[in-house]
Length: 290
Ligand code: GLU
Image 1: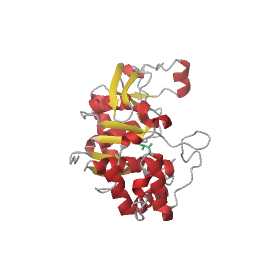
Image 2 (image 1 turned 90 degrees about the horizontal axis):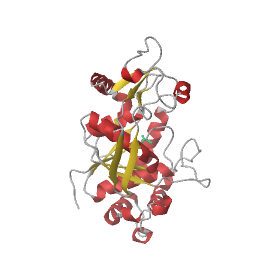
Image 3 (image 1 turned 45 degrees about the horizontal axis):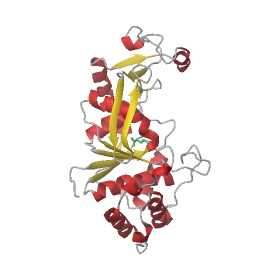
Image 4 (image 1 turned 90 degrees about the vertical axis):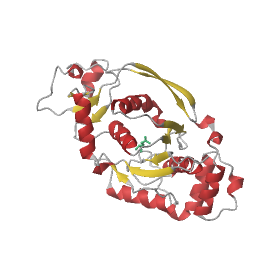
């Protein structure tokens, strides 16, 4: 069914070139958007210059292009959005929903996750010391519906789970930026790996604090290697060979449980992707792999 209000996105962090696991996520979010007549965006989540590189960004964008996965609007780079994140953090601090925290990991561990300096209540401003800024969660038994996994319930614990939104090194953190941009880009549907499932309830609280409505969520299984670890740069997942784009796409569709026989005649990328969108059936994604 065409849904021109549908806005989805693929939002990789450029820690390395695109590998098979990230291609599977990109393809799933692309096909979900296309099959619903929606808009699909690419956003580069380049917040951490110590782990990410401009070279990885360029390689990811080139790989997406080689696989026919073109963003419908100009690609957004989070490294160009710092001023907006800064403003949002100030706004959250004014609302009493974010606080400066100089507690070390060791201190937090020793206090069972509580903040010994009582920074959450504003009792200890760090002064000249390096500090992070955390979002102040509230206790919640959060229930929501995942479009693939069905009903979800997550316990959010105030203070113990409070996520960092500005790191001590001065970098804006994923939890804030992902929500800020999904709101700003009017994303209605998020399709992403189930390794991010645990973040969802916290992110919904950040949506609400920033005045946004959380999107519909679909978490798909992550692709694992022979040792059962998520494919990632840390696990030395090989970069995709862009010259084999048709074969890579077919493998990604098979990993997503789609009917390969419907695709057998498709030998070029555009035919393959349009046929895959026309026959896309997310309910075929293997439940066992989650
Ligand atoms: N940038 C995140 C990652 O590469 C994904 C963010 C998201 O899809 O919510 O893991």
